[in-house]
Length: 260
Image 1 (cartoon, rainbow, N blue to C red):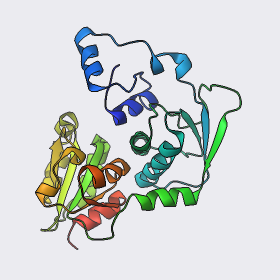
Image 2: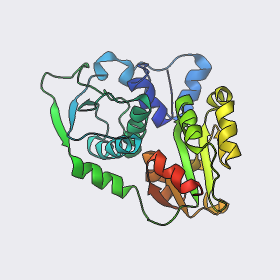
Image 3: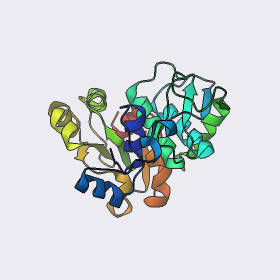
Image 4: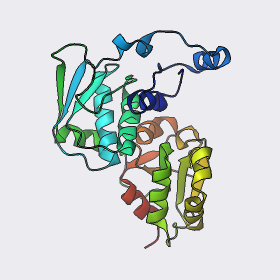
């Protein structure tokens, strides 16, 4: 493969077990035209070996904990390939948030969620992450405690499971008049979840396809405070969108979006 978007690159390498470098737009487009991509980087098996062991010394509860972990690890590892120890039966959604956060603050294009993986040596450099590291990363992703104008879920795009989960949480409720609720997913997933999309939109939310709040003119839409469960969005939005951010779990996001 020759993919360009950082979240998809680390996702496909780490979770789908496909092989792609972190390409730029022109090189990815060129590969699409000719059906070939240069044989370098993580297209070579010797470059896909873990070279750092990350020991996670606390239990992670949900997607925002995984996102905060990714932000912290990305900052300290830069472009190294970590193997994680201590992730207890992580779900695919949680690993997706871990990877997207890692590529927001670092340049890794691959990680291993367990220690059973190819290694660059028998004794890897070890980095420990404790509860204080996680707390600092988590708190750093919120710039305000003010009530949000917009709740944004879907960076990376929501899966079928996530759209279903949101619909179940919001069913029978109504979004506040002064709050926007945006859910982003691919048109493919939207097509497979039309029944759940109808529930979300009946509540007053909007389900958007093939876009992302980070590349949207939020200020021009009247948004000053954005709440999200995406560490990637919370990291980029203050600079790219010039909005304040509140980083919170999916449950907190839904509660903030809906009337009592």
